[in-house]
Structures are given as C-alpha cells and as structure tokens.
Image 1: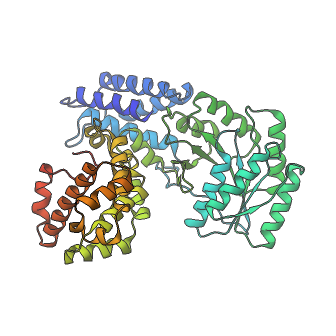
Image 2: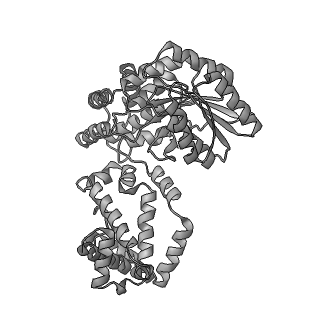
Image 3: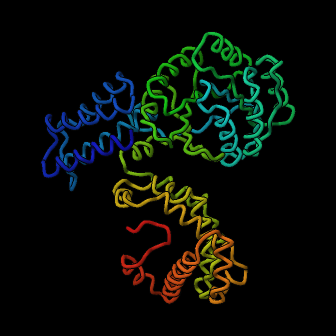
Length: 462
C-alpha cells in the first residue's frame, strides 16, 4: 500500500502544480487515485468508501495556503485522514497519542493474546514481554495455553528466554483452563507484574476455538485482550477480525509482519472492523522488533514521508553514547584508528543496517538511491568488518605496519582478495583525512567538499 499510494499521489502533486485552488474536478482526480491504491492494497470496500467520503468532505472548497499547491494540500488532508482511520480521535476530532498497554490494575495484569495460527502470536508474546521489561521495567511471566500444538509450548519457552522474561511450564495433557489458573496463581505468588497468555490458534475460525478462548477470558478477566493479525492477510484479515470481535471484547490490535512486502490494507481494515485501536506493530523478526503503533507516523510512511522519529529512536537505541564521546575525544587528539572504523560499522548494523535506515527516510531521498544495490552495499560493509577482524590488534592501531606479507595473511583470513584489503585501507585513509579536518575546525569546509568524495564506504552516493 505504501509505495502504491505514495507513487500515485506524487504523480498527482506534479500534475496539479500551478493550480490556484482545490476544485471539484481536481478532488475527483485525487480521490480516484486514492480509491484505486486502497483497493489494490486489499482495504475493505466499506472502509474505502467511508475514507474517500471523509477526504472529499474535508477537501472541497479549501483555499491553497502559502507556498502549497492543491496537490500538496490534498496529500496533507489524506495524511490526516489516514492517521484518523488507523488511530483514535477524541470528541473534537483530534488524534489521540499512541496507546501502550494499560497496566493500571492490581498486579498481575493479565494480557490475553488471540488470533489465528500463523499470525505470529507466540513470537509477539515474547516481543511484548521484551517491550514491557525494557520500556516499562516490569516483571513478566508468559504461559502457553496451546495444548494442540506441543511445539508451541517449547517455542514460547525459547523466545521467552530470549526476551529475558520468566516462562511458566504447561503440558498438552492439561486443559487451557487448568493452565491459565495455575499460571495466574504462580504469577501472584511470585509477584509478577504482568502475565501474558498465549492461546491456541486455528487455520480458520471455528466454534470450538471461540468457545475455548471465551472461557479463558472469563477465567482470567484480562486487562488487555489483544488480537494478533498478519498484515499480509488482506481481505482474510477482515473476516477473522469480525469473528474475534463478536467472540471477545477486544481492547487492542497487534499487526505483525508490517515490514514485509505486503499490500498493507489490514492496518486500515482491521481498525475499522474491530473498533479496537492498533496498539503495536511488528516491524522486524528481532526480539525487540515490536513498536507502539503511532498512526500519524505510519500514515507518513504510507505516503512516502518516511519516519524520521523512528530513525532517531533507532539511533538512540543503537548508539553507545559513552563510546561516541570517547570517539569524539580520539578524533580531537588525532587518534582515529581501524578499531574505531570497525566500531562505526558495528553501530550502523545495530540500527538495522543500510536497508533499515533507508526504509525510514522520505521517499524523495530513497528514490535518489533507488539505483544503488543496497544488498551489495550491505555485503561490502560485512566484508570490510571481516577484513578488520582478521588483523592483529597492533595492525588495527597502526595501519602503516600493514605491508605486502601482512596483506596476504589478512586477505586469507577474511576470505577475500588482496585488492579488497588495499581498497579498505584506502577508504580508511580517506576517512582519517576527514577526521583530521574535523579536528582542525574545518568541518564546514569538509561538508561542502563531500559531494566530490566517496562518502562513507558501502553507502550509495547522494
């Protein structure tokens, strides 16, 4: 959905440039593009109709403000309505801030996970545990009430350990009710703040499944009942959402696989069908790849505006501030070496690599690098790290020591040709030269000349 809608609206902005006001005719042109993009993204037809009607109502007759043209103004309206469709609005129509889990109850707060098999409930359970431990500083216990798929219990045990949470053992010989009551008792006696209950999924919605999860809801009285749905499901997600809404009082939705090549219509459809807010989005396969869903920021991604806030958050999570300060001191003293070079590569990898960073930038920037082979650039970065790791500590500190015989040894250790070792050393010398200019106060001059240099090794130019 993101690329399709962004591309269609970008073309529209160009064609409408120079027009003085928003008219019935140019609104119809824009709405046609929006309608087609949403339908192609598998958004439910009733949701599309409602969305288009609201955009039309807001757009007609609006004056073009300042330097904006009608196309830009209409994109702004679409952005605002996309955010309102995926998020929650107050009585005045203003978008509410993103909502995390409500834990304002006597511990343990119980969270019940619901959804079809394959939607990602078990991994999402562990990711949610990780989120609550890292962001909310809570003691979390997980338990699996899936007695039909023994592998599910072991899977939850494994991913819970990765999340750093506690796991309560269960067995296929028990009933889901027995498991739930035993886990709740354990959580109370061991002072857990949160108990997350992973439930059984099915390949399709059936009455037995719904009866079972309704019973669990009655037994546990959860503070949150989260519906986990695969963002790549499309129209199937709507039918599933409707069935779970009728069976359970859902308090929130978790969209998984939002980073995949899906058409992404589930984000709009599920929110509309369930009436429950989208609380979390699975944005990667990593254990910390779950983020609180921000409707305004996601609408920006959909429209190709990128997500600079998420990029800043990735930097804050991935960058070691203490190490950065030490590097700054080394740069001032002129002591930048290959160990520091390798550390910069490592920091970038922690932030999701080149592809992860590019994904959060606005489309105008990423389009310039569209011709660049990011996969190749990622491989080059990993190869550089391998070459540096094949050096001795002394060689990393004093690259001038690396002559022909040492280069051959390093190349053999890294599994590359000697020419690649030479290329790395040349790139390092370039960066070292840049660092010396920074030390001398010539940062602004260096920035102006950057267009003529190779930039950071592995990164596409521009």
